Image (tube, rainbow, N blue to C red; front, side, top):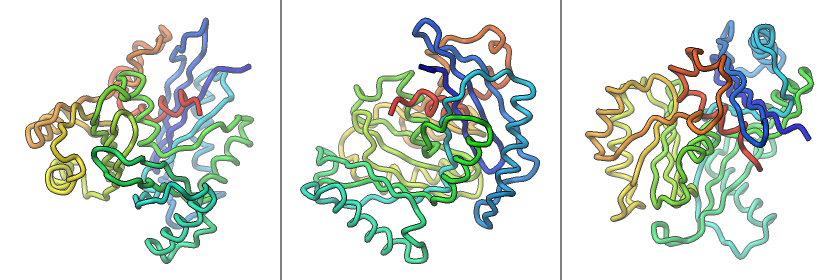
Length: 305
């Protein structure tokens, strides 16, 4: 059984890849790579053949310079390719009836979309001390994006294992470093390409998520101040224990400003902290300087189910 893993994070601008080798039941970071596309992927005016060529050219550059052993591959997509909403749910319904109900909710929220052209999944949030009713966090993306990734893997003789939202995958990378299931409230933030995703975890389980389009990284403190302090009444009197920030362009000055505004302890996640590291990787600038931005690729690679 091949336990070696590839984790790939795709954005509109680049591909990030990590390879994790299982040796004597220990996971070792074997390779890390990042290549910017020759041109940005346009997911709005979607052309599968063109987009596949862009991704393939960048991947070819990686494999030309890096010896890759793993074939089991999991891939994350940009957060802006997902629509996320949260609604109350009747947990007495059968699974198929719940899906039917949530598809109906989707058509009301996004009437311009063809519901049959999207893949819809949901995570049930049980009634708890913060949200006093059962609800569902619903996540959807277009089938054509999944087809693109499947065709990419087929072309490169890779076994496609998982596809996920980059933020959700990054939460797995945090779990590697910090036992989220033992913390009552954690704020998880993901920023990439002018999109900010805000998530609240309750004992390691998501209970709230919202995605924002912002002008630039300097708008993050104000957006967070408005959303966390003024709108997230679901937190009530409970204290957020810690907050994790994942993504790019996250300077220490930015993090310090957010900490002062919200009075919350923020951490920049290092997804490699509890992995063994191949010696040749230790001087790699991506490993030393951009580790936080590889949280999605690492989290999806280490996902079990």
